[in-house]
Length: 363
Ligand code: F0G
Image (cartoon, rainbow, N blue to C red; front, side, top):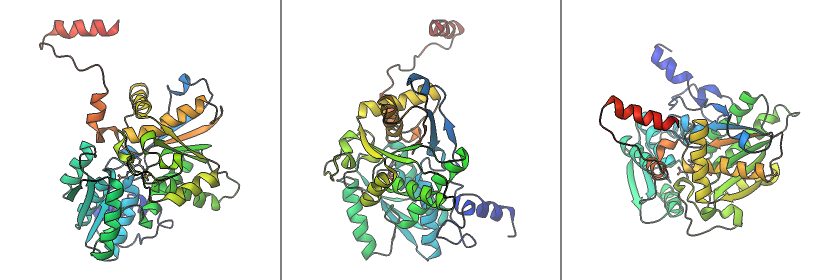
C-alpha cells in the first residue's frame, strides 16, 4: 500500500469486510464502490397501526451506491470477472442489475452490455445504465426473453454473464444476512422479501445458513417471499409466460433460481404469497409518508406482504420481522408522482400567499 487512495479502495466494501467468506482474492484488484453496510431501520409508526406487538425492521438496500441490493453481488461478480481476465460483461435486466453492472464495469474499465425489456424499466435505472456507458440493448420482449438470450450469447461470445445465475452474485448478496444478524445480535424470526428472479431469497438463505453453521445454538429465520399478483409463479407453483405488474423490477415469469428459492421456503418453514399492484403502491406510500423511507414499488411488496401476514396472524405477535427494501424510490419517479393525488400548488412569490397556505395546511 503506498497511497491513501489505494488504501481507501482496498478497505471499503463487502470484499474488504468479509474476505474469508467470499470467493475472490481480496489482496488482488478489487472492484468496489463501497457497497453494503446499509442501515437496518426499526419502523416507529407503522407497527402501531397493526394491533400486534411486532417489531418491524427494514434493511434499506436502496442506500447502496447504485441504489439497489444488486451492488452486493456485482462487486463480487465483476471483481471475479476482472481477476480472470474478462474484458466485458453482459446481463438481462428489469433495470437494477443493468444499473449495477454498468457502474461496476465503468469502475473496472471494462465494457458492459445490458438487455432490457423495451418500455418496461423505470426511468432512473435507464438513466444509470446510459450514464455509466453501458451498451443498452432494448428487446421487444420481457426479462425472461432477455435471460434466455444472455445465457445463449455468453456461451458463444467472450462476455461474462453477471446475472444471478453467476454464483458470484449470490455469494455477494448473502452478506446482507450477515449484516442483519450482526445488527440485531440474532436472526429475525421472519425475513420478508420480494421475489422476482429469486436470486436474493437464495442468497439470504445461504447467508443465514453459513452464519449459523459457526454458531449452532442460534436459530434461523422463516423466509417469506412476496410477489406481485400478476407475476407470481412461486405462488401458483408454475412458471408463467406473460407476467404483468407495475413493480417492473419483479415483472418475471420464469425465475432462474426456482429450485433454490423453493428450498429456502421449505427448509425455513416459510411461504410465498401475492400482493396486488394497488396494495403494493399503498404500502410504498405508507412507508414514505409515515416513516420517511422511500423505496421502489417492487421493494414495497415485502412490507405489504408482512403487514398482511401480521394482521392475519401468520406472523404472530411478539415476532421480530425484517423486510428487505431492495431498491430506492428515486429509481422510479414516474410511478411515485403518478400516485400522489395532491399535486404541488403554484403561487406568486409573495409572503401572504405562502402564509395563507401554511395556515390552511395546519388546519
Ligand atoms: N426488488 C428489486 C428492486 C429488484 O430489482 C429485483 C430484481 C428484485 C426485488 C427481485 O430480486 O430477482 O433476486 O428475486 N431485479 C432484477 C434486475 C431482476 O434485473 O434488476 P430477485
